[in-house]
Each structure stands twice: as structure tokens, then as C-alpha cells.
Image (cartoon, rainbow, N blue to C red):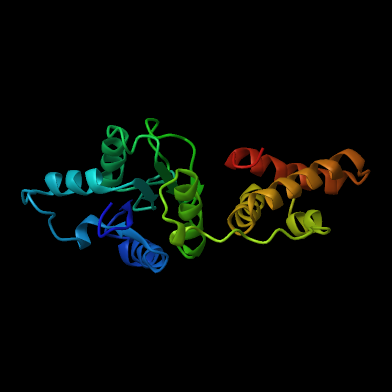
Length: 232
């Protein structure tokens, strides 16, 4: 904790700092959470001036760790990888007992993560980081990190009579990336009961429908749910 606030270490690259990390930091601060971008912060007291010591001191002071895995270096096969500092800081966080179970990874779809990073991650859209703050806040709340005034208000669960058409309408067969994007929006904008209800409605549709094309589309969306691994 720093400045009397819950503190989140935001691991990011300099390349995407302005576009991704700074807006997330500001949104967190607007909600009473201190987001740390090490390159933007002064040395903490009794910390030597070398970069490694600075990183260690802020990791020690943080309540949670968030890796923002952006496409910093594009490889020949079209995939991308994040800057090494993000990978290194993730490894350091895993070695801290107070952070080991409080790590959240956001990954842009083209980024290839090293095998030693937990495969569970949330999707990162570098052109729209607005959903990230709410996902961070919800996770912090589930970990018991947030003060009462910083807790996210629960979204209102509404009836979803058209959830199947909303998730499958206009979706092409085999368009797995678009299916995943729609599922991600559902996860980011709805509360847990609404998410579960939407998935249940999709499964009901699969059982009851006799429209083969729509069945395949609904199955594609459910596969996207399974890939993201966030709703049971």
C-alpha cells in the first residue's frame, strides 16, 4: 500500500505507456487505487538508485501485480512479443509471497507469451483499454484488496432475451476472433449472474434449435467462452 491506497504495479512497455498504461493508471486513481508505473515514479525512501532496486521496492509496496502484454516486437511469423521487462517483472512478482496469488495478465491477441507465464489471461485491446479498469477492480475486490469506497458498483443484471442473436448475429462461420471479441465484451460489461445466464441461454439454444447454421455459430461462441475460461 502506498499513499494510504490499494496499490497495483502496472508492468508495461515504454512503447505503449502513453496509449495503454497511463490511461489505465488514471482510471484506477479516479477510483481510489494507486497504479504504479515504475518509470513515472520517484525513488522510494531507502532505495538505491539502480533500476532493479527501484522495481523491487515498488513490487514490495504493491498489493497486486498487473502485466500489460502489448505487441512491442513483431516476429516474422506475424506473432508479437512483449518487451523483456514485462516478462522479468512478472517473474519477480511470482517470487513475492504477497503477490504470487495476486497476478493478473492482460494480453493483446497477437502476443505470444512465454511458457512460464500462467496461460490464464484477459484480453487487451490497445485501442480501447476502458474495460481493463473494471476487470482489475473486480479482481482486486475478489482478493479483498479494495477499501469499501473503491469497490466497483455491481452492474445491474438485466434480462437477455436476445442474447443468442446479439452474440451470433452477423457472425461468420469460422470467424473465431470475432466470436472471442463478442464474448470478451460480454465478460467486461456484465456482472457474473448475467454472464452465467447468457451462457446457459446459448446452451439451451444448442439443445433446442434445429437450424444447423445457427447451431454452429452458437457453438463457436461457446468455444470462445471456453478459450477465455472465465464463465463456467
